[in-house]
Structure formats: structure tokens, C-alpha cells
Length: 217
Picture 1: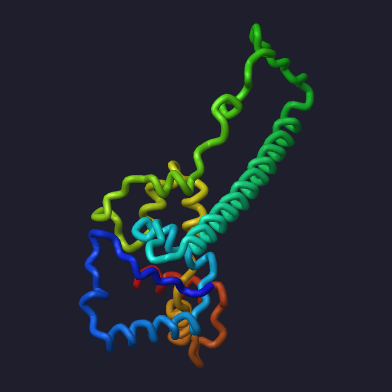
Picture 2: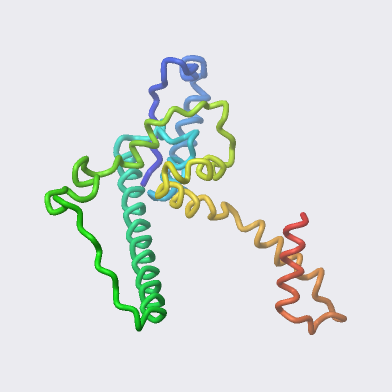
């Protein structure tokens, strides 16, 4: 998916195009062409920007890119919700098995019915419809730009109850390291512990030493 740059700016933004020279303009458009040929952005890349509260409106992106990002996020949320349902179903089955084993000799108690229970509508969701979409709820939130920090995981930790599915998706995406520098540093650090005199060190002990080294740094 090519990178789309919209030349229109907001009213409160400074118009750089009116101030730049012809040479700078040619250089800028040439640079954009090179970026389009070098990088291919996938929906997950737009989702990473969308799940940062500072860039959630995806300004400078085309309408097609924004819709593709929202559809990707909603599909991922649906998969997360299905996995959570299967997890809860499995846990309920396990708990029922444990309860059944503990109460083999005791007969199950009959649940008492209320008068007129057969005329009730059941759950509240049957009366008021489906819950509000978390994507629309996230976009409609009033967030003070001064309170937003560079680490988006802080925001999602504070809103994990308000936006449970989006917060899980944000943790899944933003936990991916942008570079392999940290992993390469750990491999280089292992050379400090393994030497000719410590060539037979236990792998578990080496793992513990590397873990303590990464925590203390």
C-alpha cells in the first residue's frame, strides 16, 4: 500500500508549501517517490499509528487507508473476542468438572423461578442492542494533547477497562520491537559470561544472568 500524503493542511497548521522554494519542493516530491518505492505499508503499520492516541485520527492518510485500518482493527478485535470466549468456555468447563467431582454424592439444587420470569426479556443487551463500537468510542474520546506521552502503552493501561479489546490489541502491536538492537545487545552480552574458563555454564544459569543484566541496566 503506497504512502499517501495529502497536501491540504488544517486551518491551525502553518502552510509550509507557500514558504518553500521550487528546489525544496522538487526535492520533497522526489523524496516521497523514493519512499513509495522503498516501503510498502501494511494495515498493521497504520494500526500501530492509529493505536497511538496522538496519531489516532491518521491525518495525511487517504480515506481508503483509514477505512482499511479500521477494518483491520475491527477484525483483530473480533478474533481477540472469540479467543476470550473460548478461554472462558474452557475455564467454565474445567470449573464444572471440579465441582462435579467434589459434589458427586450431593444432588443439584433446583433454581427457583420468579413470578413472571417467562415474560422477561432476559439480558439488558436484548433491550438496548449491541454495545458501542470501541473504535468509534476511542475516536470520540476527549484527550488532552498535553497529557499524551511518547509511550502509548501508558494510555492503554489506564483505559484497559474502558476499551478492553482495543487495549489488548494495542499491547499486541506495540510490544513488537521496532529494531533488533536490543536482541543483538543480549547476544553480545552473553559473550561476557561465556568464556574459555566458563564454557560449561548451565544454559538456565546463563539465561538468569542475562535476565538480571537486562533488568539492572
